[in-house]
Image 1 (cartoon, rainbow, N blue to C red):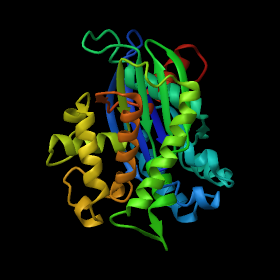
Image 2 (image 1 turned 120 degrees about the horizontal axis):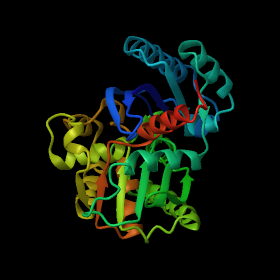
Image 3 (image 1 turned 135 degrees about the horizontal axis):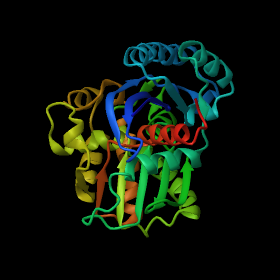
Amino acid sequence: MKRVAAIDCGTNSIRLLVADVDPDTGELKDLDRRMTIVRLGQGVDRTGRLAPEALERTFAACREYAAVIEELGARHVRFVATSASRDAENRDEFVRGVVDILGVEPVVITGDQEAEYSFTGATKELTGRTDLDGPYLVVDIGGGSTEFVLGTSSVRAARSVDIGCVRLTERHLVQDGEVIDPPTPDRITAMKRDIAAALDLAEESVPLTEAGTLVGLAGSVTTVAGIALGLDAYDSAAIHHSRLTRETVREISDRLLTSTHAERAAIPVMHPGRVDVIAAGALVLREIMDRTGATEVVVSEHDILDGIAHKLAEDLAAGEEG
């Protein structure tokens, strides 16, 4: 067994997975999996820079994760940074802070690399299942971007586009520094226009209507699943591989878009860091299902984080990393 630590730092959250990897099967055995909302992408769409307070929140989470990694004895660590740090002018400041705390340099991946990692993490368990038709369309709705990946045993086509729950919220649902609750119809229409334009871009590379199974990843999707299941608290095991119909997603999206901050915060499975951005995230999922014609989405708790761990283990086996 090789013990690895994978860190995924996105626009809204930073997540850690420490796992043992079976060298024969490639199977991951989770030792610790955690997530912290740091909102690293705060204001990036507007300013082009990472805010000082966003960096400090992220570095605080990194210090916590460094302690976990040391306690569990994971010698091999890979830190992957995605949308927000790709877009920021001052990303060198971010890189220096991560190196100082964790001793590894963040790998700032492209949208296509992000898509490949997400696909690997989401579909490794699905291969060979007779109840799911291929090819899979994996959709990873992040804070700053959404990745679309089509494939079966490997990636056939992929595209990353700049729509995400944080980016859309800051662009359309914030006025004078405050989130509009609930959003007005014209602001919802503007979000839909942005999403439609992004889907047009995605469709230039990825045939969105050819998938046999739609697989949804990341916090917006899993939160919608938790709401649909009526959970009293977030339950990863119950959410993983649950299925949501298009009508259910539509109903929940309508509910979130017409609710206030207090009403969303009172939903039992809602993470406090998602209260302001979940309406935009749910709308992205709904519009994707409408565009693709998918009647249901399979929700996966395994995503880019698992893909990072798998790739690190493969590189170790090939002798590419000590």
